[in-house]
Length: 115
Length: 146
Image 1: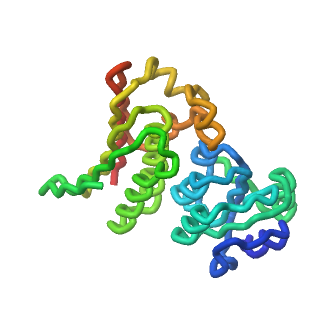
Image 2: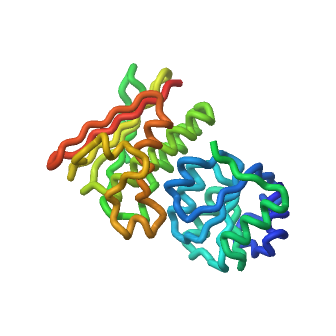
């Protein structure tokens, strides 16, 4: 699924990474627990989370996660945006809850990637 | 970061890790990942080293009183070491169990401390060893074959 499709399905606001909107992700993960994300996520994944701190970007960086969706209308601070910019990570923000956002992407055909 | 070039052994990169500094946490792992990329190391190995390094760095920031992370790169193997100055792990076998954690609430609120770190480092590496003594500190070594 293209990142632009994720943006449309979630009626999300693009925060950073416009040039990567036509990149593909093959799976999704919804979690506030970075420990779990680090254990289970593969590359080319979109990460949906309610957590809003620099470690979300770090976690995405280590796992080659290309897109992060902040749920419940959360907006990352400037230092987080800067980190994402430097690492070519797309940031989106949606008003949907984590549950709703995951549901919409699942309905759209995206699946999880538990090993 | 300090770099020592050691002929025949390859490069050793060393990082000082500050306890409790959550803003800086991950900078060492990030630097290690960049170095491996520049060296053209296989993407799957980079990923496994990066995850292990990040987990170990977070462990050190959350649990220890500070320490050092070292990575030595040779053509055959990447040797990652995380050495802290304490407080040490009381029961290492228990700490290796998934879900066991002594992390404080502040770490959990930030998305960590679920008791997955050490088992994840072991899973990512080709060889893993850990030694710890209360009052002395913890020595963790993970090897990745190239």
